[in-house]
Image (cartoon, one colour):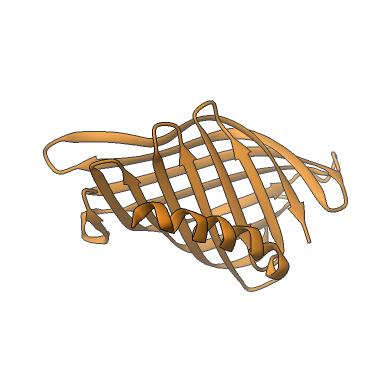
Length: 184
């Protein structure tokens, strides 16, 4: 049954760009992640979905819902979002998930057109975790450069960790990443 869900997830991610604002693909040494966001930076909300395959047959899915808006950090134009990111993961005999509260901010550097920095943080305490997860933390940092009007490349760091009640913790995904984002 679990194997039959994989083609459905891949098919839905492949069809999603038809309705999407942007799609990105990132790689670490041990994982590959695809993310599709459905609204642009001028929208008041952001909804997205993603899938990560981690070496060793670990599958991680996420669904995002954030209120977003434009602001300034000092004199730097910034897009910020606050909301939830729901995670579900499966790793051989263990599985779980969580609904993390948090947000993100993308700061554009006006003196270097095309350069931006993004940081995101989501945390789910035990009350918002299920399955084998007792809590979950997600951090993502990236520096991006827009190469052409509708595409950018980025590099950064991704960290996704869950704790088990009385049994330690597991880094679901961690590492230096590189990737590209396409805007539609």
